[in-house]
Image 1 (spheres, one colour):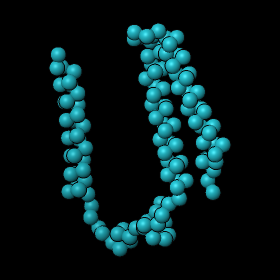
Image 2: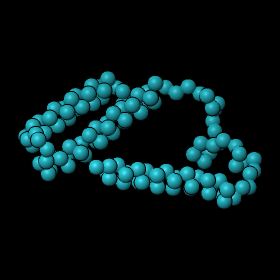
Image 3: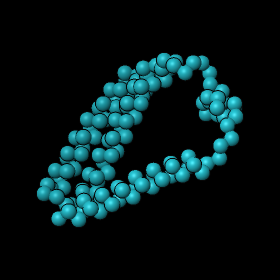
Image 4: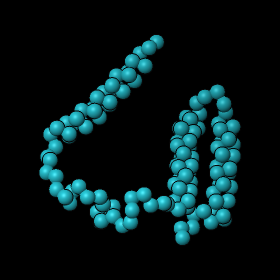
Length: 123
């Protein structure tokens, strides 16, 4: 009865052990040649412009949240498509189709609303 959990626990321990060992090994085995250029801050390979604590526009965060929302939509679509394709489960496939169409319509209305309000315009 606990066999699936044991397999998951072993996988988790192996993944965590691999991650920790890579970090520890890179810390001890990695080359250390610090210079003033390597220690200076940079943005995408060019010297930083302005201060580090500069305020961002609200549009920046709004676009980020919209990306997360529509990315989560895709995460919900993938398991639904797998269940719908196999026809598994206690609900009928017709109900699953209607349920997902309603979900997509609600998201499409939200997307059109955000688009018309100009939230996707970058000024």
